[in-house]
Length: 180
Image 1 (cartoon, rainbow, N blue to C red):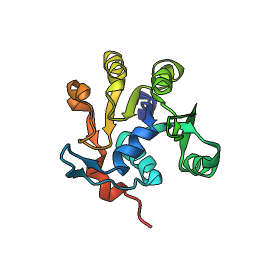
Image 2 (tube, rainbow, N blue to C red):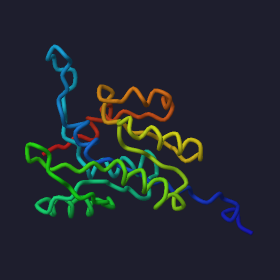
Image 3 (cartoon, rainbow, N blue to C red):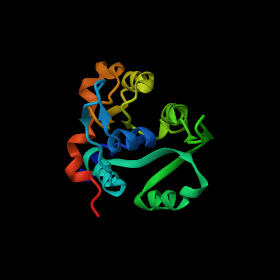
């Protein structure tokens, strides 16, 4: 037998990305109660982010959960070309007529049922406290690799128990920001 046959099989790592949480968490300026700006938004380069996930976490599959809007087909095609697998959520309109597509349930379902047997570790991209039960489940099953949070100002306090898993994307801004 050769030395190579004794190697451990490579672990498969999947990223589960809440696109709205990621986009708003990086892009949107944040203000405190007095109106003072506490976070300056920036435009994430999704192609660089895909490479970052591969390089930093060895992600082999990046599932991007996103609300479907027909007019955004060119964007979806571009994201697919970057290597993302898109999981669409039908959208509705809110009271002001803006599209709304909450992907939380789809992300949790894919991470715990649809894809669960296919990966060894998961990277969850969202700072939302709604995913706390998912993080607990993944820790219990020894499958949580990291929680990538767009910025520390919008991180949910419900994620405090997961300090050792957290990575804040805002600190990678110079590497991952979109440049014209």
